Length: 307
Image (tube, rainbow, N blue to C red; front, side, top):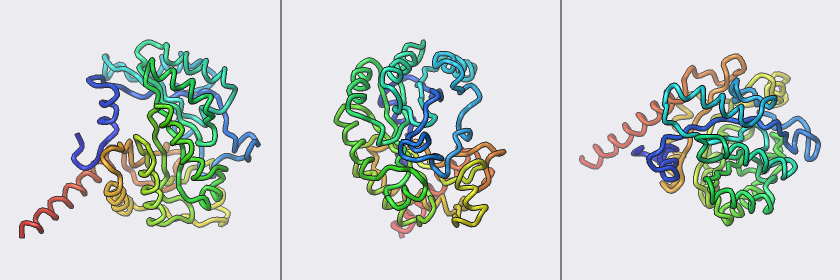
């Protein structure tokens, strides 16, 4: 158990006691309403989905084959591992419902898959689909992860999200009411936001009936609209240093209650795509630095009280 906050491993143990589980990312070949012209085109300005899709995660192969390739990738480390099918790329509740449900059912039928995580947008989750997912949840656990990114509508407009914070609140409450576990994804350092803006988003998120929060620092990646905007001097973005971001994460931990698990604080785009910030740290190395900072802060506070 992490002494400073509830981590994702503890959250998963609540759902799968005594079982070691690993997420396997899937690319279902879906799109987004801010890509196909329904709401807009171009997608989110910071986005390049190639930054988080592993090699086995390609829409040209079936869901079953992607899962089997993922299982093969991880099995040599932990032969007794069980798996979560993670529909990650783009908006995984956006499409014809019959096709979506067929993919979900296919994933859950693969051997050693014990549950499913669906990444999506808050404006792409109708009650009719939530009802079907709640039925699947009685068979195997289903977790919904909404890309919220920020609670500030001005920022959502600026990065071409084409949804509002109010839609996030609505989607989370409806998901909770259907009995489904729910998490939010937030980005720290979006254009135009300062630390107070970020912390306000965290406070607002923690007022919702969520189970998890996933953070990462804004990354400027090649092939994104944001990278082009910066190169053309259309927008000014200041990324965090490691120390600055650790300080911010310490403040975030002070806000998030123990009832909400923090899945991660950072993400690392592939080196050949990442423009900034180039910290040269793996995710676990950053987390170790953060935990050490928290430990030192507690020791200092205890020493002051003792005096």
